[in-house]
Structure formats: C-alpha cells, structure tokens
Image 1 (spheres, each protein chain N blue to C red):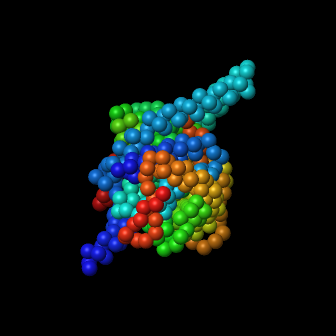
Image 2 (spheres, helix red, strand yellow; image 1 turned 90 degrees about the vertical axis):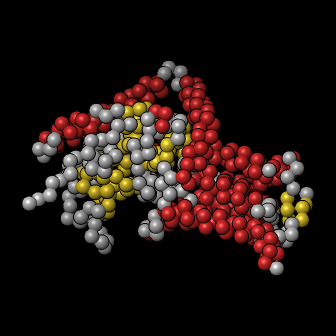
Image 3 (cartoon, each protein chain N blue to C red; image 1 turned 45 degrees about the vertical axis):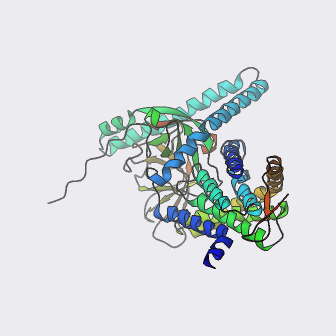
Length: 175
Length: 283
C-alpha cells in the first residue's frame, strides 16, 4: 500500500508541475516528462505485480491531461515500466545513470510513437519536424532524471519502502 | 510447473496484459462519454484545485514583477490597448465578412444569429502534460453548462473545442493540435478547406485544389459548416502557399490569430450553432 500511496502522490505532484510550470517556459519541449521518470524508478526498483498496475494507473492519469486520445500515455508509461524492469532484471544497471538513459529513450519513444499512433501512421513525413522538440525534451528529462531518482530513493528509504533487487520472480529485498 | 512459470513471470505477464488493455483503448478510440474514460474526469477534477492555485500564483507573481518594473501603470495601459486592438481586429474581420456575405447574396440573418450565441468566460488553469499534444485545462465544466464538442474562442480568434468535461474543469483541444480539424474558408477568394494543426504549432489548410486562388496574407475564417464554430470567426492569416511538389492539393500554411501560449481567458460557446437545413434532393 505504501507503494501505491507514494507513487499516487508523486504522480499528482509531477502532473501538477507539468501542467502548470509549462506555461512559464519559452518552449513546451523544455518541460521534462516527470511521470516517465517515475515509471523508470518503479521499473528499476520494484518487482512486484502491483508495480505494473501502478504504472498503468500513472499513464491513465497522464492521459487525463494530455492529448485527445485515451491510451497513448497509458501505453507509453506501462511500456516504460516494463523496459526498465527488464533492464533491472537482466543487468546490474539500476543506478541514476541507467535511469537517465532509460528516461531519454522513453521520452523519444513516447513522443514519436505517440505521434505516429495518434495520426494513424498518416503523417510520417512530419516526424522530422517533431524530432528536434522530442530530442530536446528527452535530453532535459535525462538531465533531471538522476536528481528525481535520488529524491524518490530518499523518500522511499524514509517511509521504509524497500527496494527489490535482481532475480526475476524470487525477489530479494535490499536497503 | 505451470504455476511456477506464472509466478516467476508474474510481473512481465501483468505488464503485458496491461499493455494489451491500453492498446485496446488506443485502437478502439474510446470516446469521452464512455465508461473507460470516466475516471479520467475524476483525475482532472482532483488536480483542478492545484492548477487553479498555481494559475492564481502565476498571475500574482507576474503582477508584482510587472508593477515593480512599471510604476506609472504603462503596462496596464499597454495591456488594455492590446486587448482593444485585438477586439478591433476581430471586429474588422467580422465586418469584412459581413460585407463579403452581402456581395455573395448569402443570408445575413443567419450570421447575426450565429454571432448572438450564449457564451461563458473561463480561466485557463493548465497546459498539456506532454510536449506533444496541444490542449489546455480551463476552469469551468458541466456545472456551467459545458459539454464536449463546444467551441472555445478568445478575443483574438478561434481557440479550439472542449474534448473532456468534468463538473468544475474541462480540457480544450487547441486548433493547432495535429488531431484537430475545422472547416474554414479564405475570406477574399471564398476557397474552402479543412484547417488542421501541425506538429510545429502552425496550421495548414488541407484539400485546396492547385488551381484555387489563395495568397499569402489572406484572412481565413470559419465556415460554420462543421457544426461547432459559428461562421465568420477569425482563424488566422495565410503565411505561405507552396505550389511546388507532387499531389493534387496546395500546401497552404496559416499563422493562427490566437496566441496559444499566452491564453489566460477564453470564451466557451454554450449554445449550439444553428445548422443549415439539409439540402433537398433534386427531382
């Protein structure tokens, strides 16, 4: 339950920042995608069946504030969780640097894939126009990701939410 | 053995099932009034107080800075004059449209009715959560009579339409979103087309034949034929006409009249526009 409570609060904070602070920025692409960073955090650190359900709910919540089509962010955030989970299970890269790389890739996939899906693959020639903004947002997200991941790790330690490491299925709980 | 496999892979299996559900949302095109979309308005409502507070804070902070920088009130005067100029621009476009309507012997009464619709002012309290889509959240919802599909305007021109409505907050799909489309025409040459959003924040008019007379600087106004926007509202100005390249149609780029990044207050038309009677079959 602590996992659900913590990530619900963090998602609401991230959405509040993303939907209000964006108006102060000269370019919308300068706003990092904090919800995707939270999904990366969830994938790298939490290996229970509740975690992908939480990622799904986070994406659904993001859909309430983005785009006209339900499902794009739900799909992207769940996919990001699964990607981070697999990286965490099969490699030892679970630190903030790995999180930054995963967040970078996740933002690119979300922007470009989301555009293709929402246009029903009808305007692939506009991908080139979208790419600079997508790259900029991915870079900004990757830059802030380590700080966000360190912050969430500290919060999780404080409330006693243990991280689950390594092997798939039979989890071991670490500090 | 089977149970062991399921237990061992419970996380990726759960994730895969959830991915399939979200893919189902995507491909089935869930509408705002459907059950799967209802919790979305609850989330929107949950965050609305935070967004309203943040919007007030922004207004307050901006006001203090401006007042400090502008002791003699030049800023306020400038803002007032800009608003007046924007109103004059809209008025000018409407007057020009009326004149054009007379020339083309169209029904003036219909336009007068279209411009006398009920409308409710709403504050913009939030932007889109992602960098890709172009939507804003406004203060006001079904409690104020808002419904999905209603037109949203500003003093500068057409802004968009409501796509999700909660009791006290709603979401507006801006006309420069790549999923947005509205029926409009060139005020000078009367050429009709579909104005759609582009990924670079601009607008493009689709389905304009290569032989049509469209020039840079032409004013584009709504046609009223989409059943959402009243006829004659300012959409923007033609910024470029590209005649090169393959295809049957012209590429007509339009600079939107409304500045979507500076939207603070909008007008929601709460009354449906009167539809033209269906054409009677010939013979």
